[in-house]
Every structure is written in C-alpha cells, then in structure tokens.
Image (cartoon, rainbow, N blue to C red; front, side, top):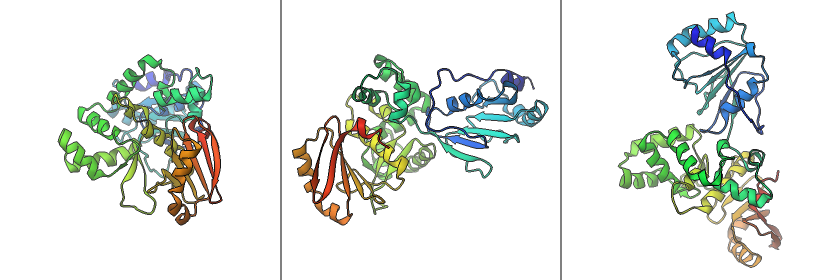
Length: 356
C-alpha cells in the first residue's frame, strides 16, 4: 500500500483559491465540466475543511500510480484508516468506485451514476472573473481584460504580454494530438456563427482530410466533454446552430484577426443559458427567450438612430413572437426608447453581464 500511504500523507493545496459561485455539499458527487474550468481546485479547497486523516485525494493522471494495485487495495485502505472522504480526479473506469462516507469524482464528462449527484462547473463568468482578477479599476476596463484573457481561472492573473503564449500552451495541453488542434482551430473560425456538422466536415475535408465519421464522432465527444455547446434556431431543429466553445479567448488566440462579435455572442449566450436553457436565436434576433418573450441584439457601436432603424426592421418577428422587451448590448453606450409600445433598452455589456 506504499502508493496509497504516499497519497494519504500529502494532499495538494489549492493555493490562493478564490471562492466560486457553486460549492460542494457533503454527499456523493460527480463534479464535471470542460478542461481547465477549476474542478480540481474546487475539490482541493473543499478538502482543506476535512481533517487530514479523514480524507484522501487520488489523481488518476499521476504517472506514478499503479492503477491495478490501487484498484485492489483502495477499499481495504479506506477501512483500515477510517477515511471518510475519497476524492478521485481525472476519473476513468480503470478502477472501481470505493465505498466511503463521501465520494467525490472529478471528470470532464458526466458519469450519470445513480449513486452520485451531478455538479457542472463552467469556467468563470464575469462576476467570478472580477474576484480572480485584481487589477480592475473600472468595470469597463475589467470587461476589456476579460475579453482578452478569457474565462479559464488560471488565465485571470496572467500578464497581458503572456496571454497568447499561455493560451496556446493550454490548447496544446488540452488537445495533444495535431489533428485535434487542427479541429479546434477550424471550429474557432465559426465561434458564435451558425454551423452544421456537414459544413464543418466540408471545411475540414479540404484543409486536413478528415473523414465524415471522424468529424461527427469528435463533435459528439467534445459535446460530452463540455467543450462545444450550441444555440439552436427557434422552432427549427434541423437548422444550423450557433457555435459556442468552452472559452472565448482560446479561439480568438488562434488567428491574428480577432472575432469580437464571436466573443461577445459567446459571453451573452452563456449568461442566458445559465438561467434560460431554452434560449435560441431567430432570423433577425441574436438571442430569443420564449418563456419571457425577450429579445437580445448585439450591436457593439449602436446609437439611438441606428438602433431605431434596426428595430423597425424586426417588426414582423416582434409581432409573431409577441416580444415584450428588447435589450441591445453595446460596448459602452446606454440609451432607451419605445417602439410599438415595447421598451428597447441599450446598455453596455459590462453592466448587463452582472445583472441578476
């Protein structure tokens, strides 16, 4: 039991941990989420509240482990040492799940086991980013930094001169195979845009000779790993869906030309999806929420005149969908007006993003 003794005596520390919006309860739980979203740090911080001799943390990515031996001896070790809490990181099915008072299993994909409750940890939203990032003087400046650094916790404190280098290193770590990197770089071009699997296949086939089967399998795998999400088109299940990736700065770092609209759309869509899982887009509206009949338009440099002209062109969908309110998201401008008895409110992203 030498390897278990070593793990038992030396749990890693979550140095400088910043509290997240979600927390771990005292029950069996599967914490899952996209790469680098902070799952390990959340668990290590939780373990600091458990007496040292009452918990053990096991990282299955630790190259020192003999998993076969671990699998045979773990349950006895838990019983002999009267361990209450067992945390298993980077879980795979190479070992069985032990019995204990509290089992914490960390994975990218949800395990869907009846014995474990599920907790999804997404990367940082803007409010969480403000807690991590200590340089902010004004919300507008902080939001500008957020656009450049992205939503991964480890990037929040990186100096601006190292952002691209560090983002590329994260990409190589997350996608170690060159083919995976090519796949991600191609996806990055479509951030926030409508995309079908066939469109993606056509692009990849030309540039990197991917087979259709491989494209479809990778999409499914990355959906399961929370790397890819979609915003569907309202009432058109077969239409192209707008692509979201688990971080919006990584795609931007793949090319010299930045996609501001893609990044802004990702941030807005992710905020809406947190509260409204049925949010969609329409032919003329960037985001539409059917239960509250609200519409969101992205127009970074909007002014009252251009916005009034834009909204007037939406009259057919406004009437059809019975829209009650329209929010226009801008970089810095604020104004409001009424159109056909509907309140149209324009506000900066950095204000809207922290509203309840």
